[in-house]
Amino acid sequence: MGGSGSNRWMTTVTRPLVDGMLRLDVRALARAGGLVPGAGITVAWNSGASVTAHLPIDDPSCLMLVYEVCDRSGAHQSITESIPLLSTPGTFGGTRDWFGCPGCRRRCAVLYALGGCFRCRECHRLAYASSRRHAVSTLSDAREYIRSQGP
Image (cartoon, rainbow, N blue to C red; front, side, top):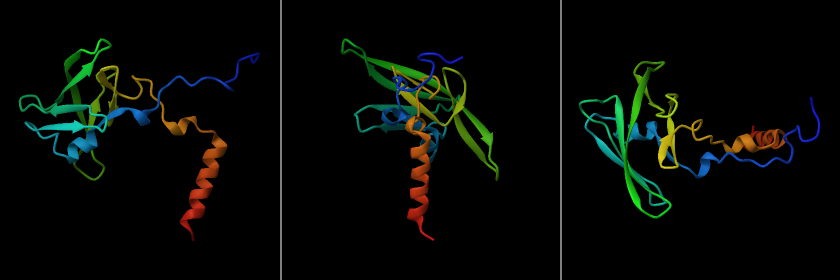
């Protein structure tokens, strides 16, 4: 165990962060009325990208996404993707909606667009910015936050 190069110091981080990715949140879709059977909603981002989400009346268990991607040659390709919708019972009644990731079938609230498809954070191998911070800086940030809240 050990030896030259066996630790993680000074390594290059290869996983992209979720911060810059286009994200589709099932909670935001539900608030906007996009999870009602027969309803359609368009989600647009500041980058100019957009996706149309439609929940068919005949199969309300799958959300249909329609969007365009641009390949390396610059040609636009229209993609229609079916995202399974799952629900779990809420603690105080009602239900909570989830996406079923088309890649791994994992239950998740947010899907990220990368490489022309919407998948979960695990499938795209994305990381949170907070996971890259050193534990000491995280602790000092927490102490500073507590001090700023006052007595």
